[in-house]
Length: 89
Image 1 (cartoon, rainbow, N blue to C red):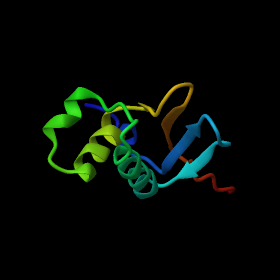
Image 2 (image 1 turned 60 degrees about the horizontal axis):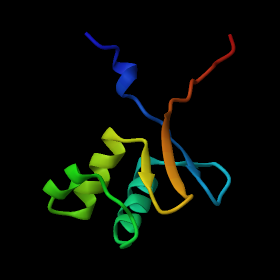
Image 3 (image 1 turned 180 degrees about the vertical axis):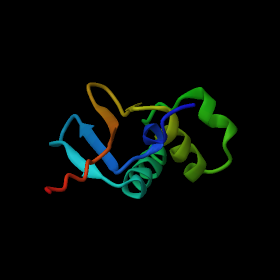
């Protein structure tokens, strides 16, 4: 049985070609993906065509990918971050 921590996420580190790294919540990253999916120049994975809405497409990207092709010499990558709560005794 898989350790439940494998499915825990505290946020995402998001890397873009024209920005410094950012920390985003799942909701913020999903909204960013929805906005990017509206752009014509974005190359979306073929398997996203089976989803009826941009929100479902973005959620599938969030759950199953870590990168989106956003144009020539540009990238968007995201990585799950798990924060440890360290308490001193």
